[in-house]
Structures are given as C-alpha cells and as structure tokens.
Image 1 (tube, helix red, strand yellow):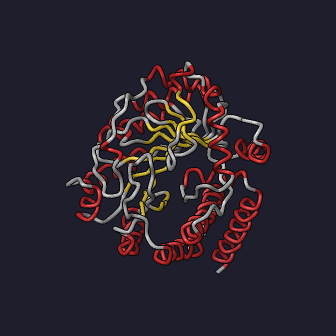
Image 2: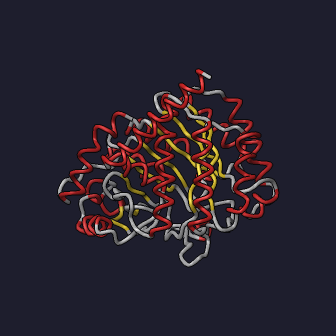
Image 3: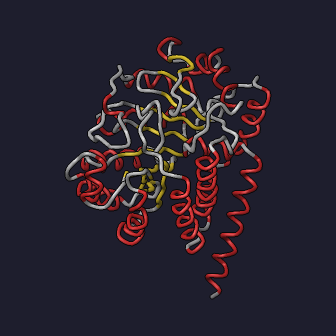
Length: 368
C-alpha cells in the first residue's frame, strides 16, 4: 500500500496540470472476451477479437517495469485461457505488483484451484485475491448467470480454494447488484456471511458499459433501493469492525459505497476520477482504455511495438483525460474508484476517519 500512496502526489499533479504522465499504478488486463457464462447483466461473451499472445503480454509487462502495484486479470472468463497463470507470472516477474486480482465465475473448478495453487506458490511476494462471482442462491444464481449447475460448481471451487491454505491468497465473493437481484440482496448477503464466510465480500453496481455491450440495458438499480444495500453493508462493518490491513480495506470499501451511492443518486462525478492517470484498462486485442465504461482507445499496443508509454502519451490519451476531468462522464466503477481515492486528499482523510472510528469500536467491543 505504501508504494501507491507515495506515488499519489504525482498522479494528483498530473491531473491538475495535464502535463506529467507517470505510468499507472492500477491496471486491468482483459485476457479474453470468451466466457462460459451468458449473464443477464453482461454481453461480453458475444464479442470476439484477436487475443494477445503470451509473448505479447511479456513484451507489454516489460515496458511497464515496476510502475503497476495492483494488477487485475479479467475476462470474459479468464480461466478459459489455459496460459492464464503463465501470463500472470510473467507480469509478476516483470512488474513485481503488490496485489494481483482475478475475478472468475468459478465454473472450471480444477483449473481454478490448480492454477491458484501454482500462482500462490510461484508469486510469494504478491497478495493474490480471487473473487468468485455470486449473484443469487442456488438455482437463482444459475438463472442469472445462464448456466445450469453454476452454483454447485462455484461451491466446489470455493471449497477447493479453501483447502489450499496459502498465506498470500485471499478468497472473496463478488456480487453484481442489479435490478434483477437487488430485492434478494438481504438473503444473499446473509447466505454469504453465515454459510460461505469468505475472506472478503464485495459488491458492485451493474452498469451500462461499452466493454460489456450493455448500453441500453435496464440493469442499474434505483438509487433508493441501492441506498438500502449500502445501509446494510455499513451496518455490518460497524458491527464487525476489522483491524490491521483488513481494517484499512474495510475503511476504503465503506467510502466507496458512499461514493457509489452518491454517484447513482446525483448522476455526476462526485469523486475526482483518475482513470487514464492512475488506472487504465487493456483490452484483449491490446487497445488501451482509460476505463472499461467508456472503452475508448488511447491507442493500441500492437501499433507501438508493445511500448505502453508510447500509447500513454498520445494526443488522444490527453483528450480523453481532459474529458474525464471536465466531468463529461460519471460512474461508480469500483476498480477505478479505489485508485482515485488514493489520489484524492479529501477521500484519504475520510478513509482515515473511517479506520480510526472502526478501531475505536473494536476496542470497545473487546472491552465489553
């Protein structure tokens, strides 16, 4: 966490001046659009492009050096690539990230468990987070995800990951909150807390994204309904305050939920967005985006000999950054929001207050 905090003033200065262009600390790589789910909140499985090869990823990671601290490898379903772990280990060798994050639908149980065992073993200095997507209980999850038996396979994958007991592996549950399941959130949340008991439970709003081909789909919940979700999540954090690194993560998550709630209600950029400055997204074909919501390319890595900086410093990249700074878009995208919070002094103060309040609650709980 210290590395991105030390670099935060550079990103803050870059956003204010529009001149400095440090390489991003938070990068998402969509390794393929292929997916073995047909979710009702996502159409990415319909898309096809020429995916990067392992060699192309290695050349890209080499050009990034040690700038990235937080790397996410997503899809589609990332584990459909048999070379996924090889790709991630190449990033580990070249970039030395502190956090590696992988979302998965958890259908390919053996491949997920075996892959994570290898990754945790061969990338010992990174904190590896795997988030299993869960949008409903039992058959309801299968219905929302479009795959019969998905829930059963997810439970088997979760159990297999638990048996690994790798010290650098965090096993999380990730729920997309949409119009389709928000009425069932209370029951789902209780199921996760009492039955699965993951290391972390995170939620994200269903959004209209260019990347996911969901523009025009009526999937985002109403602001007042989402407010009730936020109230529940905050109440749980107050009742079970975490400490140490987990407490810091909880403090950031609590602020994110408030940012997401306000963004949805006010329909504006309530948190200064650092997408295209502190964070970015690389599509499977090498297009570099500020974020996956707009998915507008700054350029393509194949056109620059896989030199990330050459794409990062294009005129088009500066135009997109200026558009974001003017507030011409707004969204509650979690991945970009966490980077933005690190670069925004008022947000850091809010997170610090959340953390100190949680410590006080934890101390009182122990005393009683």
